[in-house]
Length: 435
Image 1 (cartoon, helix red, strand yellow):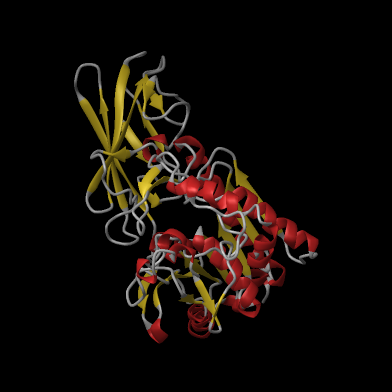
Image 2: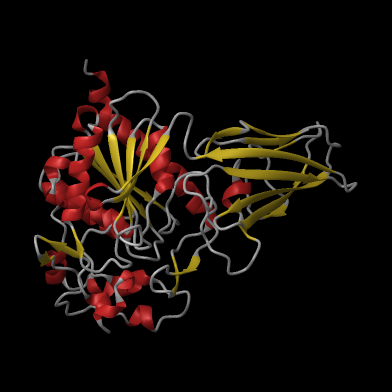
């Protein structure tokens, strides 16, 4: 009577959630429940009215009231919020890349209940997981089923650090050898982003080429936030090792250590370097900047918008030029994903800066920029909760907002992932068709 189909599939596959056998016009309460992160229960609920045939269908029906508005087939997932106030905002399972089980309950007017369940998987059938600690690397490798070779993607997290296993597992589920690389706050690595040596990433790229031997030597970089800054930077420094770039809300300039800095470096540590290359710190936006001030961040109302401080720094054209990533050195297609209400930094502006510079230098490969109106910094992939807009930064502890709103964030999650899959398919098409 209540069903979710398909009942077991990858997380990016939409489900049809519907119920039949109700009284015409009957109002019902439909709720979802998922255990995420460290055993935290996330829930959502909507009140629906059955049609003349006694059915409700989330692909067709908008709620009378509830956790979301309008027709949204997967609204009962992206509108979920933790039951306990102040709970961790981690939306995946406690075990990296583990499947998520969501239970559905429909409560009828007479008090009776119906139930159903569906499973969202990050790793599809036959995907294998292997921890990598070779040559000082802190990474996890996910491989698709079959002997290969497969095109490869290296995945980098942002200022929260850690190893982004969920995204790498999903890449592998769609046919890519995916290396999720940690560079701080991961086993064997420092706890902060300060003074990260870029040769570490060069080693990872060389390892991926030598050990995985990707199809046609194809290695794409996929990074989020500071990881988005990194993928553009790495592709400009090591163009011979990088075939394509996917920048999720990336930066167009080199930034300082910012909120992920090492406080042991002193009171000015957030203005210290994040990246060291060939023994020298890279020039960054805050360095010798005549207009930069942290006041909009330090003194602004909570939840603070980190982007407001960065906008002051971008007013110094000379500092911007010194810190600008030399993206014209990239040798491959580039996909840029940004959000117009990004509270962390001005990703729409940054992506426009990157696209303009590539065009000005006659970049020989395709460049795409997908800018999502009303969305915030936390663009992930379908279908995950998008309600936790305010959070304490995992390194600095400061209360801030990523911006956006749940519905446009959910749209950005879905549309960005469709764009990424299409981008990679186009970038690797010649590899798959060559005998």
